[in-house]
Length: 90
Image 1 (cartoon, rainbow, N blue to C red):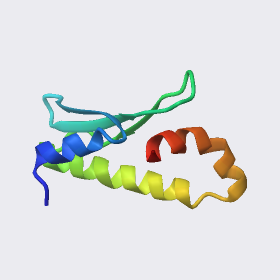
Image 2 (cartoon, rainbow, N blue to C red):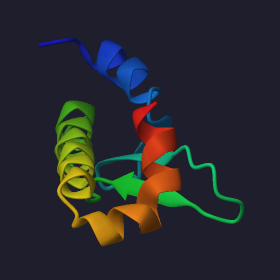
Image 3 (cartoon, rainbow, N blue to C red):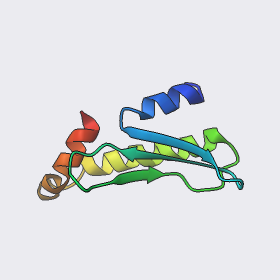
Image 4 (cartoon, rainbow, N blue to C red):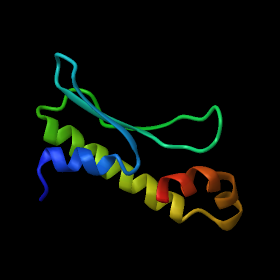
């Protein structure tokens, strides 16, 4: 498995990753790149993870689930998210 640094760098493919300690544990998020003006898409871990690795693992799982869900949308709905998905996947 890649180390934490490599995993955070890999998240740059999708957007701007954040990793922070809230004083009550670790939290990770990625602000996804979008091409639509006025849009913002974030994928986040829960707050309070015991380690940075744990927070990033949950973030990665949620990001991959979201991308899989976008791929499996009915064709009519795919048109709605086409701009965001195109920016994320390319």
